[in-house]
Image 1 (cartoon, one colour):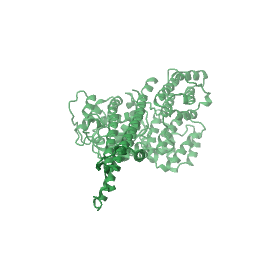
Image 2 (cartoon, rainbow, N blue to C red):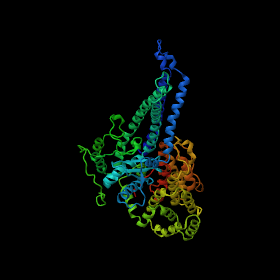
Image 3 (cartoon, rainbow, N blue to C red):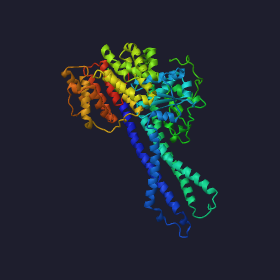
Image 4 (cartoon, helix red, strand yellow):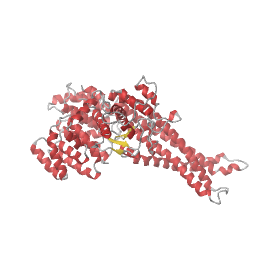
Length: 623
């Protein structure tokens, strides 16, 4: 399966999840109705003539039970979904995660951030925030979020302290597979489903406990027909029926999770080209006393997110969220004969030393062999002063401002004057100070530095974000036109920071064909066709090359003045609402358009990456 097939498979599994969720709700309602109807008439069963079973059918009672049960389940699910609406960060904090400061000087934290940064830059995804679970001594990790834009990586203290860089890279590669393959959205929805069904059991538990206490000392507890007895039994029944629902929900969760863990292991090997690193990390889990277990109360409801089993071995194999550890190791290391512990003492800095266009598009959502070294080299060649500034929350704004300053002195003076009226004096001064060093960066390094700064800006005080956003818009609008680099910075900022600071809404897939979005398709293909050429004949040929990838679509090449970057951006927002199979066709058409002459320039590659990123399709960087 390729990137888009994984995305579509995840979307289909969500539909099945909704089906099973509905089925579980119906069964729970029927079971609770049967118990309620019997309890209302249980005294009649003691009469000589026995219970009239026809009395158990009561449509009005069924309606009441159904509405009450449905309300409880829906409320429980919606509560958890709203709680998790912030994306991956809400999951990390639910597990008592602590965000690692981008400018941390602690060795193990810095090493972890570097591994995550390299993986993100190589895969073309936004750099996720990284959280550490300080209270967890076991070796484990997770990825959570609704999309690549709000994804986070969480790592336990045990993993951070005991894994070598190669082993850590294997674990992070495994988690990036979940980010790229659309697993995260489904995983968060599973948490909500489980919580909704669990509410039935919790409600029954509290009913049983409260009534049991209140009736234990009452003089009427032995009287026949005491209504408290009915409520007490109903509470007990809700506990039992609720946990039956939880059982089936866990069954669904486990079935979804187990196979995905094998796929994520395989993807991690593909990313890192080092099966030994991941295999050794799994071996350390097998030999460590605490293994991969987590102590956080929320570990049970989030167990399907983890790199390894976080809640102990299930006595029923079908309920296990992860495949057996030895089976995962043998798939990576066929010579493995038994779980062993390579060494779990905390590592020191010395211990951790690291031992054509068509392929670009076909590798969407993957990491080619050359991508990780290339990304690592890009990061390492950035001047230390700029790296430190990009990782400091109080200076990352200045890095973005400095990157947007025009090369022409007169335009730069105009931008700085505009910035002086929008930003605090210290930010204005820092931007001006960093500008000469930023001017020396290569075109390949500039987006990487912007990506590092964008991730750091998620640490920004939410009250400061509107002013920062307005300042960026002002710098871009200063010359009344938008360059490709300015467009890339703007799109990176809006698509990564706006959701984090709750500006706007996330696009949702609702178009299953090209027909409803033909006009937008024509706009984007036209913009890409005119990119890099002023010749109508060449633009027409490039447009036709892209159109052929789409089959029968009624679109025409727009005049150059109507195919601006701004028009393309507006069109891409609508195209982001298409389903993965449609996006696959679109990205292929975009690629065919810019590569019509058999050669792709750096500007064309960046334009293609920007268009693909708008569709949540990360394209790797491999030079």
